[in-house]
Image (cartoon, rainbow, N blue to C red; front, side, top):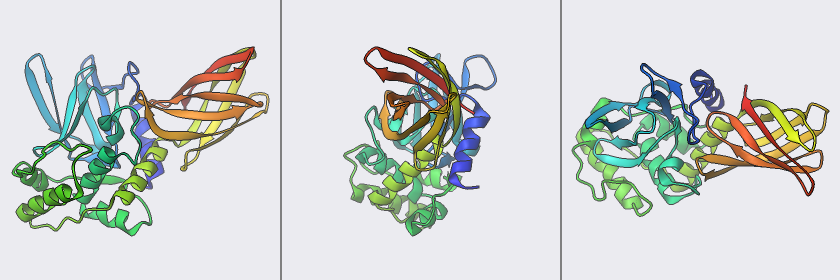
Length: 290
């Protein structure tokens, strides 16, 4: 299954694996428990933990990068004792959310996280290094996690100041324990991969309504490069492109329809919302992924 199909399957199966505050995710088990997904590619075996009512729960991400967490509770993601970051999720989490608002795939902290995750899965590392395609899944096995818990690298928390030498040292220390040679992918490869992953999350068909100075319906398709095409119910073309810059846990859309600008955001639930028009001819629009 290619990256586009994998990302689309995750979003459709979870229905509301949200990136935006208050959107919520799929209920798992009891009330208030959400199913989220950690996406670089889908990361399987990543350790996560949260504390609720004084009790700490620790587990690892499952198929599709899935993890369960209580709504509104901070979750920490780690590889052994190497912390990637802590965030209060609302469904889907990517390295951009861990790095913070305004992050892009080229942000140093984002690249550092992506480099480390991919480089710890030799199969994924081989695919990314070849530059031909992107892996559907990054898998961190139990032996690797045990080895990572025995590293003493400084800093233990990955940040924008973590150097390439420090990343390679982490890989070398883990490899010395597991008997595996881990090769660090370069920053450019990490940026290309994360950009592709984000566009894979965006890609698909969407529809909704607009209202204001005029009203009607609209449908669009986002392709695997983040390019948007579609039309209103009256046949006027909609064109535009997605941004891969994180904006308050969503991503910006900028386009035009009927000669008017359409600007807004797309969150991880597949929800589009924003404003359209100029001057006295304005309105709002909303819609969802199909």
